Length: 79
Length: 388
Image 1 (tube, rainbow over the protein chains, first blue to last red):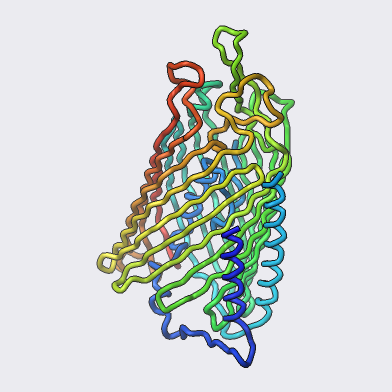
Image 2: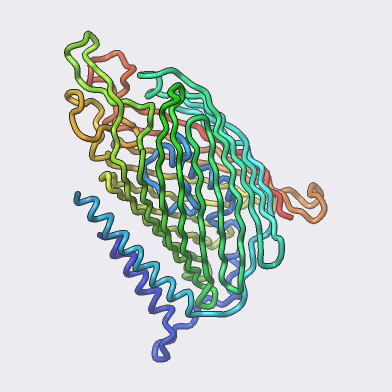
């Protein structure tokens, strides 16, 4: 229930922030030339995709939680 | 029953989210995006813990065919030697191999990235095939990236030593995500994914144990029986923060629930710190906990005690902690070939599993009074990445 609420609030914020409404026109607040820190490879969650795929595979066979891993998923493929 | 209704509500909610994101994806335009750079990764992986040893290689290749099309190929091999507590208590240790291959293609049109991925995993007693489609869109001055995805998988399950055994299962996955730049140093990502399984979801080798006073050992065994459907829903919030000096703080929290009444959550925090121009250090800590499946029991009171029966430790109440450290060495230009850039990485994870209602049946103790089970595992990854 709490998670659902968080997701809804996040979506509402996104909708507001993305709204094309002329009376409330938030502009993108981080300009392209201000993104040098974000572009640094150390900031990437998928800095090492092949390692992330292995970690997801190790965990999916040993834990019941699945989904939203960010690696595409696909199941353990094992029994 | 309540869990099934809750999951259905979540599925309906996911469809609403997908509808909203689809509308948003059509709303904004701006500068065109670019595909990720070409790269090749070659990895050796090793897992050792709880009586299991698994290792093997993996290769990931990614190459642009043009400015708008890229192809990926992935191969992964597990060589498994198992004498885990489940196996030792009721069966014989075994060795087997699992081969996995994936092929993918990405197509970029302006700010919309579409991808198709095919996957096949093959071992003696399990064949899994799936496809996955994803679409993502940069929007709002490229501060926001919205994504949607769908996967379908078909599994053929066999049992070694029993030629007449053949079962099937299917899996559907639907996911949506939003990646949002919040400040010049903070980016966050919210992902949700629903997974629906139907068919034979058991492990064909595993058994449950029950009290049987008619035999000298006092304990009998029968095959596990799982429901033929399972629906789950996961929500994950991730964030990366660039610290005042050149280092990054990484975070994620995921909440999971399913129709088998398993609730789980995991939280991870990582820290990435470059040293000089050529070394990156990374440390992480992760905590995971889950409740048991509704039909799980370590010891049933008698045979056929309920419709569904499980004593799979992965369905029990447990938690685990991962501590990880990694180092990446960025090879200097003098050691690179031509215009390529290369990195060598070594990562080590230590995982400690603690089961709260799964007992070690191999221990010398009264039935149902054995010590609770627990084990630790060491996971190693060594890989080279080449960007070209």
